Length: 81
Image (cartoon, rainbow, N blue to C red):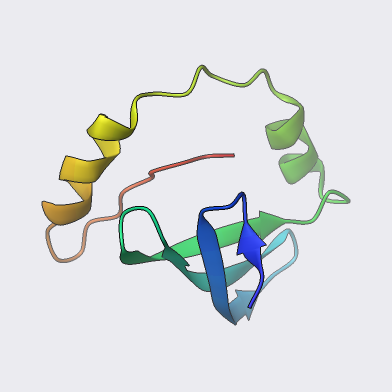
């Protein structure tokens, strides 16, 4: 399956909607299953999201502890772009 950003291996598409599709993927750095939302650039909401200024990337050390301390029912956003 394809890799996204050299980090996420796509497994299967799990849903689609008017503005995006969602894929089940594996974060190969943190070794966990994640969801990837792929926006359609034709959607005004997604176009605004990708056109916004990008935040500075945070250190990887911040993401690793959160990968193992999740609680049932919680959603963590690890990477936005």
